[in-house]
Structures are given as C-alpha cells and as structure tokens.
Length: 432
Figure 1 (tube, rainbow, N blue to C red):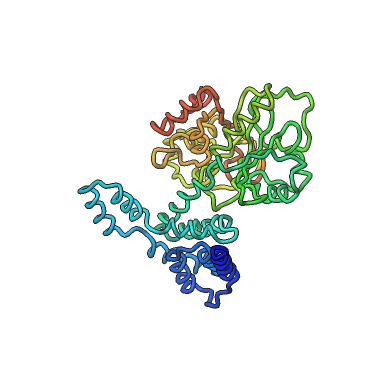
Figure 2: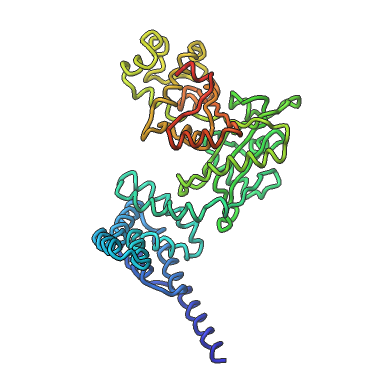
C-alpha cells in the first residue's frame, strides 16, 4: 500500500510537470536558461516538460535568433579542451577503464546529451529534424557551427539507421496523406497532380519510400523506378502519360531519388535505399536483369560559365570551343539544335566535369559522389535527355547513365572509397 502511494505520488508529479505552463518570455535568453535546466535535470518527467517548453519557445524565434541560440549552445556545451588534455594525461598514466570513460565523456562534450534530452519532448524526433534544417541554414553564414551540426548527424545516423526504417512500396492504394506529401516533396521531376502521380505508380513503374516508426505517414526518402528495355535515355519518355504495352523490359532505371527531410541531409539514407530496392525488384520480377540510373548532372552549367575561356580551351581545345562558345554565359533555349550537332564536344566537357573536377579527391558533383559511393559505374552521357527549362538551366539538357554491376558492386565501392578510383565504361573512356 505504501509503495503504491509513492508510485502514485511520482505519477502525479510527472503529470503536473507535463501540464505545466512556463511563464518566462519566449526569447533567446529564456531558451538558454531552459536549456541549462534541461541538461542539469535528472528526472524523466521534469526533462519532458522542459524539453517541451524549449521546443515551443524555439518555434517562435526568428532565424536570426535561432542562429544566436545555436552559437550560445555550442559555446556552452562544447568540449572543454583543457579538461580533455588533463584527463588524457591522467589516462596515459593509469590506463584505467574509469579514466577512459571520463575522457570519452569530456571529449564528447554535452551537446549530444542536450540533443538526446530534447528528443524527450512530444514529437521530439520530428522537432529535432526541423531544428537541424534551421541549423544547416545557419552553418552557411557561420561555419563555426559545423561541430554542432556534426553532433546532430552523429545521433541521426543511429536514430535513422536502416535497421529502424521500414521500406514501403507506394501504390495507388497508399494513404492519400502520404501521396499528397510525395507530390509536395518531388522537386526534380515535379508531379503536377494526382493524375500525374498515378502514371508513376503503374505496372511498368515502381515507387518505394523509407519511413521511420515515430514519424507517422512522413516519408524520409523515396525512389522512383521505370522498367525499360536497356537504360532509359530521356526523362520525358519515362514520365509521359502512356506506356508501351509491347515493352519487353529487362532493366530497372532509377530516375528520381528525393530526400524529403532537409534536416536529414548527409545522413546517407539513399545508399541503403537503392541496394534494398534492387533486392525487392529482384525478388518480384526475375525478368529484370540490369540496374542503372538516368541521373541529373547538377552544376554543369554553373561550372562551365564560371570557367575562363583559356581553361575551357585547355579541356576541349580551341577548335571545339569555337563550336560550343554559344553555351558560355548565355541563356540556351530548350531544344537548341547546336547541342545535338556538337554532342561529342558536349559529352567531352561533361565527362571532364564528372571525372576530373574534384574536391578532397572526390568528384565535385554530389550526384556522382552518391552513385559512385554506392558502387556504381559511369555508363554513358546522354545529350537532350532532359528537354525542359530546368534541364537546360542545370546541365544543357545533359543527363548521366550510371550502371550497377551487381557482381562488382563491393569492388567498385571499395576502390572508390579507398583509392579514389572512378569506374567508367568504354563509352566514357574515349572522352577522358
């Protein structure tokens, strides 16, 4: 009886804290004060109440005040290097498990613990994903916040581990709320309406998405696949409203991968998604023998227009440059026939951008890094593959076919990661 009274007393205290309304002003100063309380409290009930109030206060801040909050949190909770050094010296002397544990805690600092405790708030995970989206915007203006962002990424990699995620095949029978979100999140090959989406869910198409159990009906990332004869070479053919009933498909062409949550940028969900979808398709359709992509080439136009003429000439030669000079610093109209006329030169330029332009010994193009990191090989460059305003503004209409050789995936992946070796076909070799 006595024990029951204690349990009820604790429960009542928890309810009181959870229903508590904090009366402080909702500004950066009060938010920092609440954050100090959160990091110091031990009780679960009090932690939930404080985390809830922090989330509500944070939502009312301007982006400038959010940046100030991130800067102060980073300063307050980052590792104390003097204490880390002292504990390191101590560990070198005694090499005890206790000292090692203390050293690890000091080296981590308290930022990750703050993020963990914020996850106790109602809808805490969704709130933290949204918070990181704000943080990424602030990092652009203040690179010193990168360490704080790395703490978010470190925790998100665990929380959004594919082992916790559920892969779902999206069909016309999927919940309307999810279908509406998919229309909203598709940025590259925009979906106009439900009728347009319905085409992408027909028999010759596959649509898969990853979901997290605590983010109900909220897709994290999705991939769209077309069953084609050989790799597709034109995105307009893929998304046109009718399909060829005589098609003898032998290839799965991945044509769109969309990260729905900006707050999960660089958490590498896509790497696991492609491999999982390949497995699902193999299990479902034995006629599909080949797997590849029709991928965009973002940044090609901006890169080309940034280059001085002398640099371009060093890449493709003076004679070839004279033939495509019209591309340099001009608005190229969709379907300009000169691009097809000089497609060999355009391909050579695109191959250089894909393979030779690098940052930290990896291709400067993010889509290329993604597919090569997955074990893909660059198969071909396709001119006039995206005949749209967006396609021409982004890459003169050029797209890339990557191929996934299933028997070589691990070898290609390891060579790329460990030796910065880029795998490409004989079609590409002649332009290198």
